[in-house]
Image 1: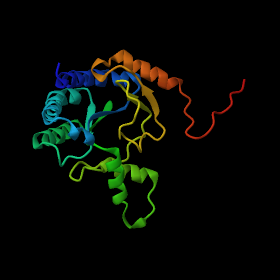
Image 2: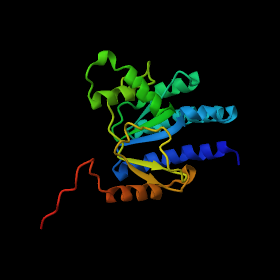
Image 3: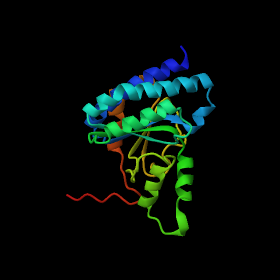
Image 4: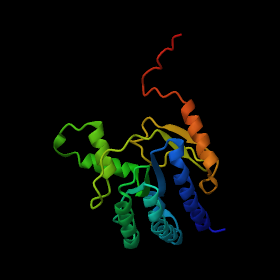
Length: 217
């Protein structure tokens, strides 16, 4: 089957995972939809992906509103087709009051580019806190996009398909993320796979550079 068939099934998986994520205690879910490096793929595949992303937004926005799910997009917008850019803006406006789950889709996204842009916005050599810099990174690539404040650091990063690398995804935000690798490819990823990742996450000892306090009694 063509690669685009896998992408289509992948969008259906997104719908399923968004539906069950809040039940796993997840309040923010970031999904890598299209990296800046993905422009290197064949033009036909890229074009199909752009249309698929727009179709998904048009189809799912109303459902997200009903289920109090907020959608926002991170990454550059100046290279996206105008129709997709308009769909992104409409989805963000329509779902901005969502409080049950915040879904961030990374489209034309590069963490390195975001960090460089944030550094370039660090004007006058003034002292900037880590939180302030996080806000600059979150805003990177969205010159005309909605105002974005600092977002929480990533707690758990799930990498599907047997790959074991970050691939330029949320490098700043993943400083203390727990990494979980699975051989399951995204089109085959199910609720049970998400549950397994969350169970493994809760087994980890998160010290953030400190030590685990001794238990008494």
